[in-house]
Amino acid sequence: MGDARLLRRAGEVSAFDTPELHSLLADMRDTMLAMDGVGLAAPQIGENLRVVIFEVAGNPRYPDAEAVPQTVLINPVITPLKKTMEEDWEGCLSVPGLRGMVPRYTHIRYQGRDEYGALIDRTVSGFHARVVQHECDHLDGILYPMRMRDLRQLGYTDVLFPGQDLVDE
Ligand code: NI
Image 1: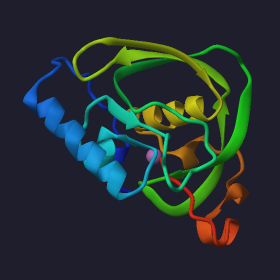
Image 2: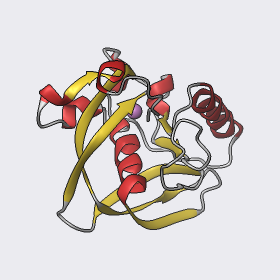
Image 3: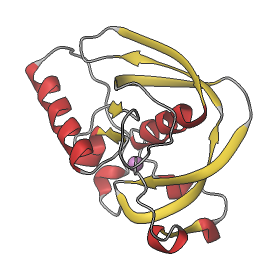
Image 4: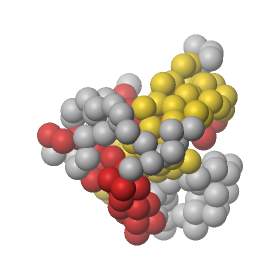
């Protein structure tokens, strides 16, 4: 947080199944794995492209979270399916050590393409919907504190959740 590259609108990907795109995704997977995250957006490693990855299944820091399949989502479009929003805690690999209470739509449809250009079209809710909204915000230069309604609910993870090893997005 503070790096101007996290505040830009990322550009559309126009070519799929290219060595450059596969290389970017390998870097993103390595980074997410090394940092034990559930999701990562290309701008978080300095690439100004509309590419996000996420996966929740088997994350040792989130054993109780509902499974979210390993997904590569490119040029995403999110459509809220209900007006309902729900607040919950989020962390971010680009905002280390902090947690904040963030409102997100509970039910969304998301569409986009995978790294081969195949269409993705899913209707999801709950934590899955939250992760997708968090990651796609990175593509529009939005970090979760910018979505918060009450900054009194922003704090250090080890103060808010002492002894817990929580996951970031
Ligand atoms: Ni994040």
